[in-house]
Structures are given as structure tokens and as C-alpha cells.
Image 1 (tube, rainbow, N blue to C red):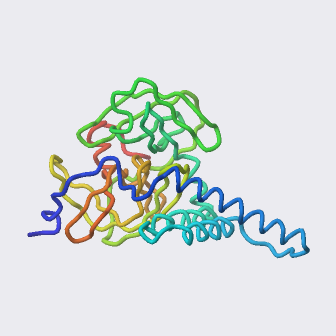
Image 2: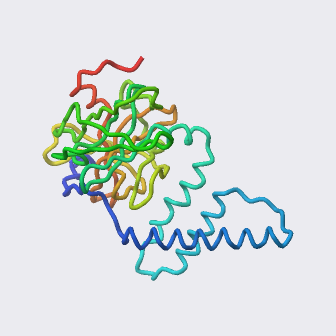
Image 3: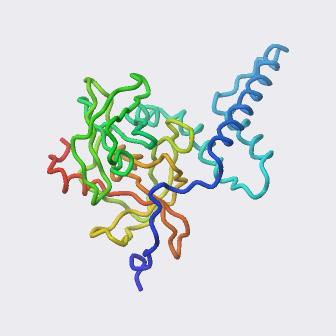
Length: 272
């Protein structure tokens, strides 16, 4: 039996979530405030030593982790620590400007702009059957959006946002990768917005009900990451996160739609 044949598990379109998101958000916010207060007190006492902002977040998250019962998963906090570090990277900062939060009724997910005209790719299950859809850019805020193309067979949808001069990511001409190749991704997991993280590409996998293989990802993917762009080392989007599965060999992993399928379904021209 090949590795691709072994993946015949139930897909989790809502993505994996191990802890209560509201509780985690409140705990992190409270400990972040405590850490910042302590830093301010030290500064007022004459300690002028400078620490980067992400270090305060790191301290806060570690304090929260120490308060949690051992039954909670500590790796659930790792993505916040990693995001804080990655957010000091200029390339990641640029990528974040093109990644949006997508709100459609009770559904919340992620999307990303692919041109200056406000064309946004997200997952079909994020916006399915919803009439009122809004997307939020990091700098320009909330915008109304409408669905212009739907590809439910590969869980992709294309939105159109009114406006112009939007920041955008570059699509790769094809989904190419090496096994264990590193990638970055940005999304809105749990109650957070614009969280950057990283992972590695495992290999292709076959899903029940899908006629084409998808990418398996070793990465911290949570509810809200649906629609997150998988960005390679060249800064190009090669896939779109849409779910998690439990694999016989790799355990809980993320899965992503290769960007090739967007071209196949939409008849869109390759990027210049």
C-alpha cells in the first residue's frame, strides 16, 4: 500500500481545535497586559533596556501556558510564539497586507487577494450559501464582497471586493515542491487575526470523494485557517489550506488545494 493510498480518513472541514478559543483568547490577552505592565514598571524604575515587542508576547504566552492544566495541548500556543517571531520579518509583513478575514454569516475564515482589483480566493465551505459576505484587509479595513466564481468540487471560491489598489500575493504558475520543503502561511485561527506561521510539505494525498490529490502539511492549522495561502520560499502561493485529516502515518495534518486546481477550474490565465 502506498502512502497516498493510506490516506482514506474522514476530512475535518472545520479544522482541528483542541481548546476553547474564547478562553484562550482572554487568557492570552490578560497575560499580555500583565507582561506589558511589568515591562513599563521596570522602565519607570530606570531600566532602559530595550526588548522587541514580540518578546513581550512570548513572555505572556509562556505565562498562560504555565497556568493551564496538563490536559491542554501546549503546542496550541506555539503558533502564537512563532507568529510573533515571524512578524518581525519584512516579507511576512508584506504578505499579511494581502491576507483577509472572511466573514459570511456565522462562518469565519481566511482569504487572500490575488490582484490590485480586489479579487480574493477563499474556501467554498467558508462562504457556502451565504448572501452577505465581508472581508477585512489589514490596513483598509472592512469591505463588502460578492461571490463571482464557485468551485465546490475543489473547495475554492473567488470573491470580488469593491475598490482598487489592493495589496496582493503572487500565484505560482504551478504547484511544485520538494518533500519536507518549508512554507509559510497566514490566517485567522481561533479568535486571532493575521497570525503568521510556518510548516513543511509532506507529500500528495488522495482524499475520498476527490478526483485529484491534495497537499498534506505538517503545520499548526486551526479553525479559521480555512482559505490561508501556502506561500513557498519564493513568495508565491502554491496551495490553499482547507481542512485537517488524521493520517495513519503522520497523525493530524493539514491539507491544502494545489493552486493548479484554481487554474483548471477558472480558466484564469497564468500570472505574468
